[in-house]
Length: 340
Image 1 (tube, rainbow, N blue to C red):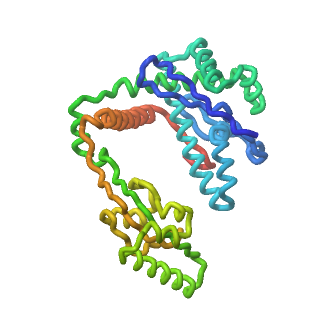
Image 2: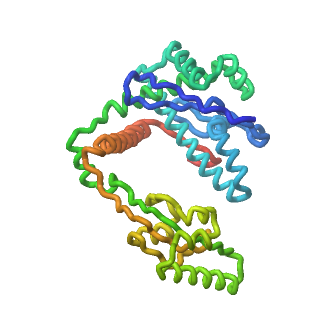
Image 3: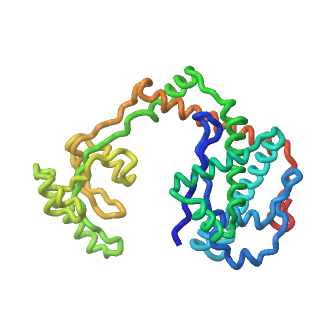
């Protein structure tokens, strides 16, 4: 069966700062027999509300299924335990936020919800009938889906009101951040690179590996003795770049294997490296041209810096606000028997 599409609910705050809220159409995938046999119980209390084990399983089921495909035995149990605590923490936070929204009278009207669902249908090229059929296959009704959409709208509005609306950035902050992080806003180093590649099987015995190293050393010596590197690459290289004379194109810092990259950017223009070993094999590298990145001017990056400062301040405000909610709430956790 094709994976369910991820459907986007539009922002309803009326401001350009409002986030695009993503909401999965299918919250329940294939419920396993094991989870169906678990006796439901209360695993947490958040003020006057409770969270049950089945709600936790529903929240994290797709992730739990992937864990079961990837791990087994004690490691599976450890990974599931870590994931359960993470998903429970998310559920607790969502309950706290929704409770606070109710206290301050923040809601989403039926018109808001219907408009959001209509937008989802349009963006995903679906009819309402198709959506209903997809939900039914997962044991959900259209009303179930609308209830979850309503929650997402309320949470988006709450975050705008409690967090984003209280964060601003002035010109002095932008300038100070740029001055303190200039290197992060520079143009990345670039290099036009050619190489000659020799396959080296890690399972090969020492004599076989020595023979390949000796062959590479002979080619390296020829390349340094005013040989035509491009012609040598066409003749000796054992990968797809042989046809183009070993041309790897223009590579930015961060796009290459760490050891290979370190060698590339240690070279001068037209310089040829010693033999470089990577997990792929042996390389002789020629730096056709090295372009050391330079810091971009403040005018070039001002908007980027502003976005970063705003994001960092928003994240900080969000952490402070969620901590305030937690500190004022009664929270009891009993995920595992005897835990408090």
